[in-house]
Length: 299
Figure 1 (tube, rainbow, N blue to C red):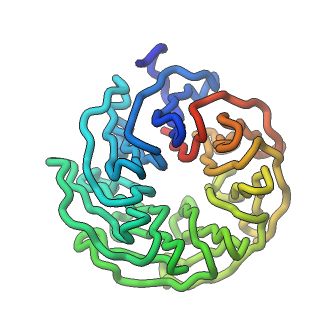
Figure 2 (cartoon, rainbow, N blue to C red):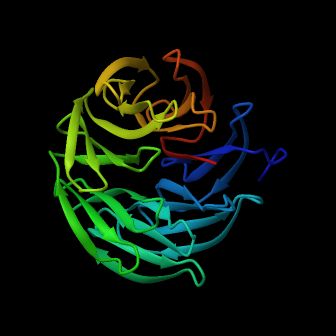
């Protein structure tokens, strides 16, 4: 239950081993609440107005819909096997959910919370983003080594972008001109132009990277290197790695806070979140959370 007054910004950390979401006040970096969800929750997404949080539960093959004011689970939506990445459309009328083991994306109508259809997109879809203009869904397919681009209105794939092995983490630059894809087997980050849907450059980073986000008004990207226990800092203009930040064991995902200079990295092997000062390239605090934290979303 909620233990403190609602703040302007909170982080929602998804504990894959404890089947819960830990809620953190990003101003104080203090835990203010927790909510129980389904079996082995993975990733989450906030609605555009931040009133709802959807959390995918891989082992129970469903998604929990949470009221962020009360931290109550409003409903559970059945999807398919391996529920993973998810996102709301900009108008909040639909939610798209990647199902890693079923090789599909589920399209959910948020008025009825019914699944409209399941779309086959590739093998092992993991992470998912929707472009700010509401036209396209971008999905990383870990096993078929490509990125699928779907039409939001029809749900149909309109493009497959081949990538090197293991595309997993995904983010968009602030202007949405590039989709940055972390390929954890090839140990590179690839930039895909959202105008042409072609790879335009690549940057080598550490090994087994999973999560990626931008910070400092889009000047840098942060990439988690899970088996090396650090976060790579990429200069996006120079297109090179400029620093590595030591965090705790097995960092999974990373998200920037509203100030653009602070980030949270989930340390899956240490049951905590590392609070990163991006400009100083150092960890300034750790926050204990649930077991094996994976996803984190901020808003």
